[in-house]
Length: 102
Image (cartoon, rainbow, N blue to C red; front, side):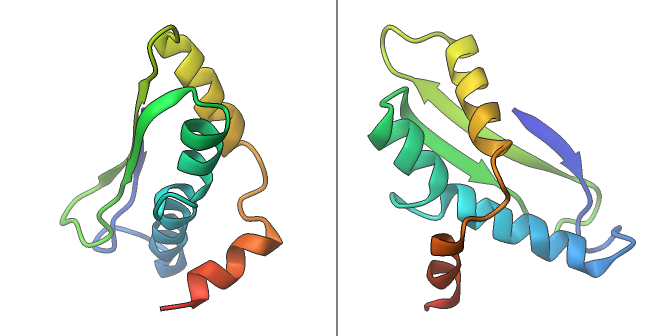
């Protein structure tokens, strides 16, 4: 899945690119990040998950979410699960300390 988003060079409000960068870390900042923890290790719907965003791109950028469903699950299953997880609150209180630590 990909969403057209601004990069630092073309954004109207600078906070937008930083928010997208934080979102990428919350969603896929390692095995304990939201998408791997819920969909890969928890529900075991995905065999791999990745989120990509380049805030320093020269033009408009894509916020990309890549996921491979496990055997027995379809791409539609994967898409529904991803959208459901993304639609949750942007950040849960217990996720904040992980962003602040080195």
